[in-house]
Length: 78
Image (cartoon, rainbow, N blue to C red):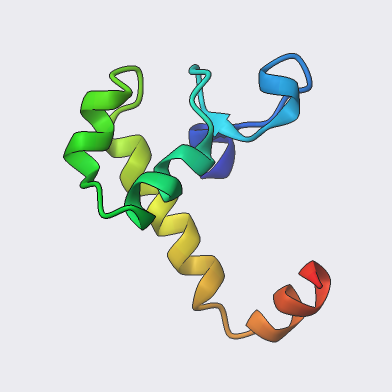
């Protein structure tokens, strides 16, 4: 699922994770949501990103944050 939605390449935005086939950083989605900007408004701001891509990224985040072994993820990130 991840490679279908997210691209990480040193040739694109210096290796920043972006929505596949765009130059839109994944972080932009979370920045918008943190500011209270809706997904629809995010999509208006970044027309090269599809709603399916956004929903897939949110699903990936959900799976990561609700994984049974979440403690090991936190330890690895620390």
